[in-house]
Length: 367
Image (cartoon, rainbow, N blue to C red; front, side, top):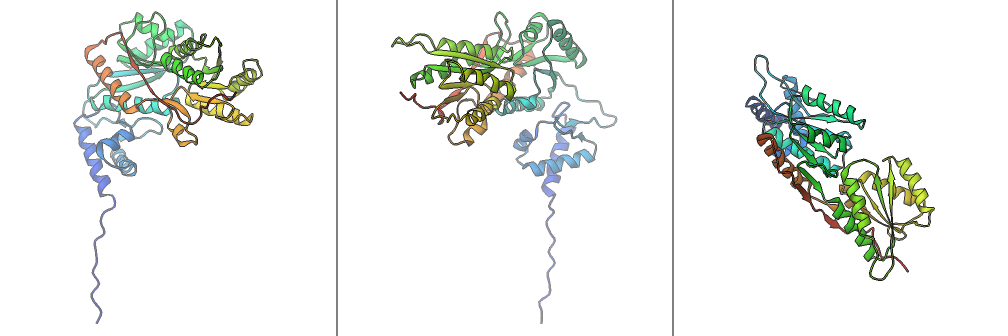
């Protein structure tokens, strides 16, 4: 006699996403955020769920008309019919290039800052201010501040004319980057002068006497500080030898980097050590050296001025300077919250001192 078959009720696969949607829905009703949801990474951390579960929850809320999912942008919170939108200060983020083109470490720090601000009901609006004449830049910034009803701004590695606008106008601002000469604004920045002086010292101690800094012609103060620090380390040494330090400026494109390096390696100052600014440019330089048959670190030693997660996925690890993006994001958040609340910050710079990761792309100069 056969045993009776037992029918099991299968567990609901979407139960966790339904519960997650309920949590987000309640937070929306309570006005936990401003105009946009925090980024996916931050929401996953807050709710302790995976990205697939979070995305299923967001799709459910989008179908309900609670939110609007936008490809490549923050998810917009939609105001329910008959309900007034939550009052929220607008913090402007002014940058010279789209946030998607930032190095990963800087992008994560800025994303964390935006998420923390959203949790406090502070919405952010981004404005990409392309370079132009002083009058054009001033008009663009003024229009952005007026149209978006911006209460204060975060300035991300902007040129002198943008910094000067905020000196001359009563809009509170925090500069994420270095101040240009004679500009006085509250700021938080990597001490690039110290970083590049240290990098040049690393090369000199390894016996290299022909050094080069490969840096964009960006017009931002951090790159100018990099040049000053690099050159300050290459004065006469105790032995009487005078190292040759060359600054290689380029427009940021792989083609221009190739042209500039061709000229450099064809000159009498052909380097044996390169310090390269910006992670994307590091990879462009590495490909260039590979094509020329210049082994790293055999023929050429190389250090990246900036961090990138990919540097530790190479063999050998690319020598670079590293800072904690989460700690930076938290520090940015505290400063921006104080600026939004008080309307002012101390003018002295908040300096970040990265840690040198020696990696395996620097070797002693062969004699």
